[in-house]
Image (tube, rainbow, N blue to C red; front, side, top):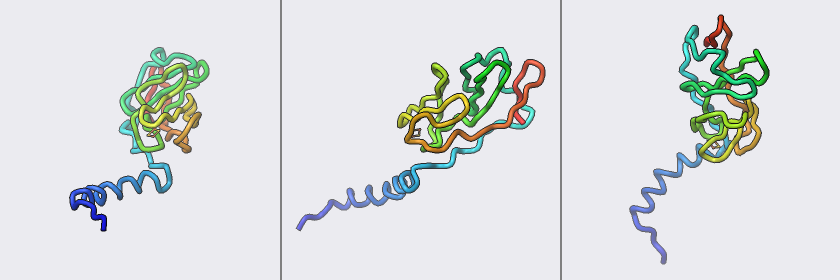
Length: 129
Ligand code: FES
């Protein structure tokens, strides 16, 4: 009879619940953003038109001139940090999901858009809240 070594069984038991969490729905809720209302996130001049910038835990985009949007910079698949906007796309380094400047999923495995973050423009600054 085949018997698994005790160590293998213990490691397998410890890892299984984590894997189940990631594969039950294929989606995890992104952690809340850490921006505080009134916090200055960036100067409008620092956000290129047709692109965006990741500032701490927030990605700020400017899809069209003067239209600013912000999202949690966390992939909605398993919560990896989205490091940057490249050629108008946010690429997740963990499993390859891609998000557009409007937070929409362009490529999975993520299926849920990025979580929006409320921002407003005050003078030449983008402010949380
Ligand atoms: S965490 Fe899996 S694709 Fe981003």
